[in-house]
Image 1 (cartoon, rainbow, N blue to C red):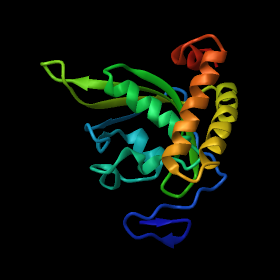
Image 2 (cartoon, one colour):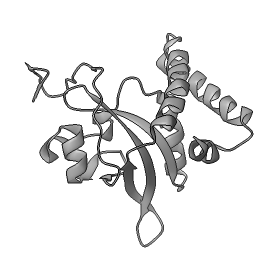
Image 3 (cartoon, helix red, strand yellow):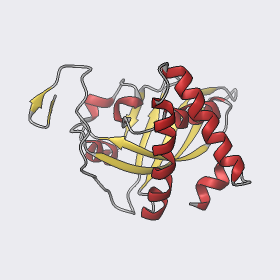
Length: 182
């Protein structure tokens, strides 16, 4: 694996850059994961935008594209919602193989077998509205700062989740209404 001109060993990640990658409004990034969040399918748009090959991503945790600016509390909400059997919409800042970033508007759903048991997850991601990204990035920056302000990662994540919950409640809407109002 090579990024930013430097070879990486397995498990290493690129350093984040300030370069944004975009994709077409008519394109959809699609991936599927197993119950542990390991990628079982990635479409050609995912591969192209992320800069990873299909071989690079299959079997790897979806967090492979997690940008360090993303608040952990947002993923706590996302995973909790999915594990309860419900879909969720979220704005997510991802990182490419080379450290560049890209924003997505994600619709993530649990996948069920014939017995109504969750067997994995399916995510469709579209190019987000730029004004929505501006609004959500301001909130995410505050959540991230709150999380980082604690010495213990779990304590920080809980504090960020509490802050996110309070923010949503202050708007007198539920999370989904907030996301769709941006």
